[in-house]
Image (tube, rainbow, N blue to C red; front, side, top):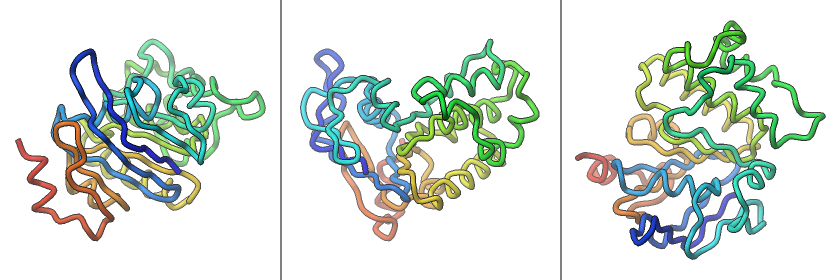
Length: 231
């Protein structure tokens, strides 16, 4: 279980997060929604260790990880799929997947068969360079690379951005399958209400660096949430 407690985060003198508290449990999808620029990505960067927090704590499986750097968090089972995918364009699909071996012991340094069950297109393209893939294929590769690390917490930053509808639907099915396994917590940032509503067990809506709405799936009132999504 991930537990974020009262964190504040700054970029220089500018405060990006204000007193944020959030939980994400194994076997559930926790969805963070909000407009661009409200602090969603900053929250994910704080959880992944890519940006230090000024105050508050972040714990994972009852261990305080607030001061741990990203590779130490990765070794504890935290993986992030960044916005914009950030695959290595000059490496092949197989080489991109193998970069996920870094936090693993030698006995686990292989690509699980499940990866190609979830993303069959990647098996056909193992020798192709990442930069030659379409946007949707690159997004599948970015998710697969994170899954190679065998995460207990999967962080996903707007996986539907710039992706065609058929791939969005497929990514939704992948998230559902991962949730059904019951051994992974999924923290998902989204702007699209319909995608989030289909997947979220719990949700939090952000505005100006704060959480302004939160609750379970049954508490998600469309009009209330969309008020904080429209420009």
